[in-house]
Image 1 (cartoon, helix red, strand yellow):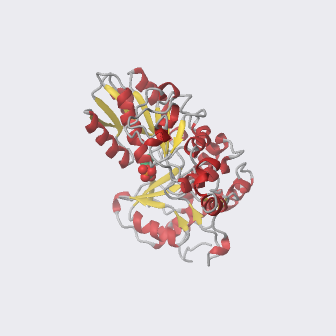
Image 2 (tube, rainbow, N blue to C red; image 1 turned 120 degrees about the vertical axis):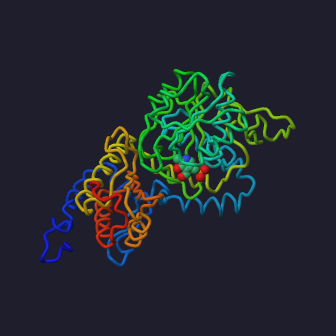
Image 3 (tube, rainbow, N blue to C red; image 1 turned 45 degrees about the vertical axis):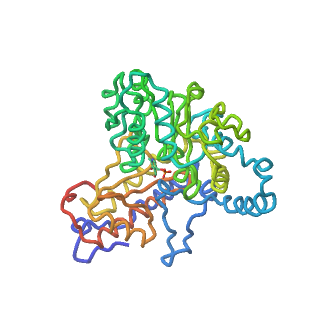
Length: 435
Ligand SMILES: Cc1ncc(COP(=O)(O)O)c(C=O)c1O
């Protein structure tokens, strides 16, 4: 396996002698309670799909989750029977009309919520708008500002600034670790990402939520990169409002609808800035005046995207019998193991992890700073290892505990080492950094 020329030692070239972590990967996979049976619920590459005989490695489930095997059959049935044959009767008889709340109840246990607290529909961006404006409308009269996670995924910041402009409040970007110190009695709410999309850092949801409440502010969390990757406990920690997407770790498919969580004690006061007819107390009354429905239904807007919703509903069946504690244990073990393999296989100084080593601060991805990262990722993908690249120089590898194996992690690190040995180092800024 070694690529070391005969006249050089491995230490001199930085080339590892063998894939000495492969056996350990096999043992870890054999002992994995979320092993082959859960992985088999997904469509993934087989070794025969690639000329090299190696199965492709998919480490981009933090961007688009893999396809659950049961989804194509369900969607074929929805199209041919529920739409093709039953047509408009399906709104009632096939349960289309109530799908946003029904599927919300299926997401609820994954974020630590009770039934009736989550509704599915629209994009995350739209739900950020509903949550932020709805939150501002519930805040005390003297509030003059909202805080926004300074490291947020950009859409949250764009929407929050627009929401603040519409409601006459100021926006203050604050690092998540500083929110407890920066919140004041003038703060209506803070909008925070549970896991940082770029670095994979897990923010302190219990601590930040408590600090916000102590100052009288609401806590609005973006769960896009945590739900389905680790246990999230919105009710236990008193989260007020939360949003999240379903196409990453919830495997709902490209553009599958997002969700909105509203704490039970706030639902009566939740005044949606998008009061569409689907959230009306009597949608088919066609009244000119708006009267909100009770409960989480008031988070709905217009006609739901049924095909995507029902794909998501079936995708969520993969969680049957899965313990979120097992998911978290495996996620941390996978990311630890990948970091070990990277240290063993990658030439020293070529990458530096910007994901915290501390388990308490890590989500389910590993982000490596690497000069020439765009080109490196292109070459990784060409060799069958799919992660992604974020500007300016970050390689992101997402670990989806339901289907990523330890063998995947080992192979990805090995191929990364091969690619970096094949490509010359481009930027001396990262030289000397640890593997
Ligand atoms: C943390 C986070 N928030 C919001 C979004 C945007 O979601 P949407 O495109 O569904 O509006 C994303 C998309 O990847 C995200 O990662």
